[in-house]
Amino acid sequence: MEHRHLGSTGLRVSELGLGTMTWARDTDELDAAEQLRDFVDAGGTLVDTAASYADGDAEALLGSLLGTKVDRRDVLLCTKAGVRRTAQGPVVDASRGALLDSLDDSLSRLGTDHVDLFLVHAPDPSTPFTETLSALRHAVTSGRARYVGLSNHPAWATARAATLLGGADDVGLAAVELEYSLLQRGAEREVVPAAEALGLGLLAWSPLGRGVLTGKYRRSLPADSRGASPHLSAFVEPYLDQSSSGIVEAVVTAADGLGRAPLDVALSWLLGRPTLASAIVGARTPAQLRTSLAATDLELPDAVRAALDDVSDLEVGYPERW
Image (cartoon, rainbow, N blue to C red; front, side):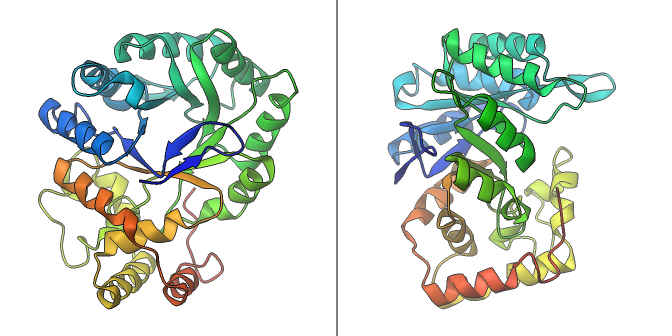
């Protein structure tokens, strides 16, 4: 598997990252262990998690596998903080105390003294942005994190963070993580150009359009799919509309012509985008992950890539889904 620099930093991450959003919820311990072993054996290094995934149980499961199933030194841990669950639902809190307390709890669950990348999970309009950035700075200077970044933030916040953390003696902003696929190219309006100009590594979550780009939803709703899961049906539903269907059909047509699976085509398209450091694949089962790992050898012909660019172009009726 190819390893790429995370923006202008010295950190190199695998072109595919392993997502853990379903761990300890839809993915049990045995399947998670098999996924992690297969991922590392294939050359993968970047493992993406968050304090809010399964209310922390995803991190705890991952931590239980480090040192037993794989060596901690063989993986790069990325976790996120700033979203906590309450009886009234999820609450965004990117205050200094909330972020640092969350990071300490994550380190305890993961069984490690540092993470390689620490991200603010979502924008918090009720906290001064400078306070949020001070927590990222302290995470690095205290040794809790090697690099820091933002997740799901707009381009203006990304640019401001890169400026405020970018002094010669400061910690710098390394990465921005957001949804990006053939079904969600909104990032290309402002965030992707900002990342390219500022030397930030781009991490893409849901690179397969929440599973829709695999083509499995073309005719029906499979009983074992995310769309049928009580936890994730609302997550998938926005991409089952008519405009998405046209893009999926183009991917399927390209795949048929190349003798590959639609998943291979969708991943290859994304891996060829500017500034992309890693595409985070969140498989529920080991079999699904192995399918994604096998897709990295495909290089799309220029004509196919251009056709996919056209059919999913932002200016051709493409829906905004921020």
